[in-house]
Length: 303
Image 1 (tube, rainbow, N blue to C red):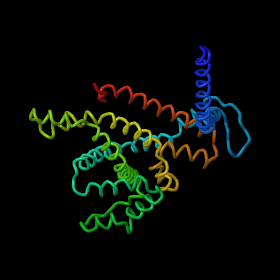
Image 2 (image 1 turned 30 degrees about the horizontal axis):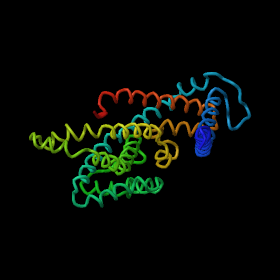
Image 3 (image 1 turned 45 degrees about the horizontal axis):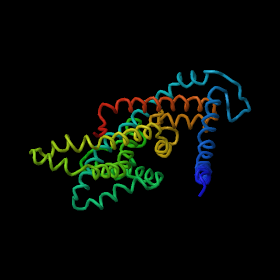
Image 4 (image 1 turned 180 degrees about the horizontal axis):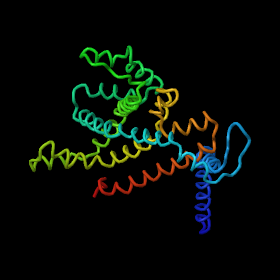
């Protein structure tokens, strides 16, 4: 083999690798451009115009749309309701940890419980909402019938502005317990047993082992679940739309995402909806960056 053949063959192989690499990357790149980059660009443009679905106007209006929704009382009601939708996160994290620990230790029936608690997450959200609307119905719902056995008059869970958000929060927490416990169970299985053996030799109790070993080692998984949970909860929409027809009485259940949808497809104010969505996206980005910054103080990164 000549001295020039080997470099030429290596160059040919590198060129082929680049071609195959581009062939594999191109489809997903086109998908990102078509369904992410272009829509985001259109939304940014629309946010600064008076784009209305009922007219052909696309005039530049500057920050007028931002002023409009920031002075709209219904936007701030929706913002308050959106913050309330964060309440399920600590509940399903706590119960997810408890169920995961029970499954990890081989508690009898843990496999069956894992399947039962995972079913709500993979089930149709429409079916879940129909089930919950039946359970919490004011007149014939099983929840109020159960409370009546103890002489308690159950509230109007779905009609009373003070209770509709509570119903949605409970349903979201119930739906997320299963998938949360699966993630935490996977993290538990990655904790080396030598840590617990050393702790037992030193005489550490089970509770101390949990707080000194288990919980710190779970913090990366808990951080991931917290970030995903916050982003998902801030974008709560389907539950509100299915539980209520117009955001609830006095807009009591509407979230910012529902507000955006209502402005875009209910009123046809695409420019206003795009401006609100842009503002909301930046707010979520800011919250996420703050969480990453704070994670340095409590997330265990290993040795």
